[in-house]
Image 1: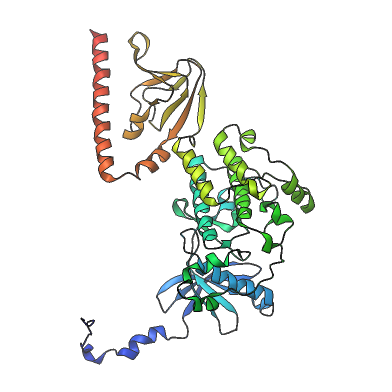
Image 2: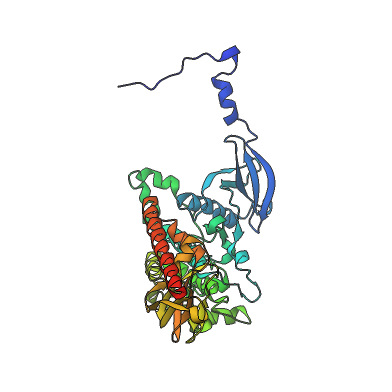
Length: 445
């Protein structure tokens, strides 16, 4: 058996020793406060420098005024354990948890820089009204949240306080779920599953006993059962309903339930049917509207039974290109003109589109596109002005695929596949341009 190499080098000039090398990991002043990131009812969150590891992290400390509040301390400790138990890109990773010199519980985590989804949506907290995002952006954010929650449920954990304020949007619309203070362990078997080979460690990893008779959540985003049942009686479908409310708000710009008082709001959540998203905004696709409505079913049994099902339907929806907005044109209406920027491609939902070039007597038809066909894609792919014009031959509906959406799909391609497609596009464009030139020459002759 080969032994690991051991250094026998002597420090030059007598500098350093094993003990001096360990000093940086023994210094008592490990964390140096840089700034305050936020302060809530339960804790203070600071930006600190970790001198042991030489990095900047976020540190959450229980408020001094709550040091004797047993219930709050248990919740704080359990939150740290639950976050530490989860391992997903949409959950902020925790680094350490301990009791500080003042006897207060503390945990450190990755510093996340972004804006809450509430700020991104410009939510009016009085009315709940918001500014909807582009559909492809909404679907990206919602899909990530569903993936993160699917992971939490697979580990036996419910969030139970989903709302835009508890979702942080980072660069490139990556998202992180925060504030797990209301979370509940609904399946110890799933929670301790990763320790099944070490049963003796389960006792060390257990959560502090909580008061499961508490009612938790934020009223506007509660499930029907959450309005009248304690935490102990809630299951994964409660998170699905709350996520459905957020999805509804992102699509329509409003909340599905309103009330002049808390009692009236909770009554509507339990009893009042939801107005379908597509009836609020006719531009919302019927299929997408039905996904939201299933998430918002009053009975848990009628909802999706897991976020994996939600993700499956969202993926199927996206694969049909139905996520792209629909525009309608009357017969004879111009869709785009020769020389316009090539900022979108189009898929014909119904109707006919004529592609043509030139004006007046020099006007020449280049082709006729019908239902299911794509046009306008070459200028988009080459990022160049239109080389022809397009007109609806009859009442026509098209799906509009904007440049950002197309580029996000292109970036996923294997570089070799992308190179092949680029070559095909270039050859096709060259031949198309040659055809147009020949047509013009024939007109001159």
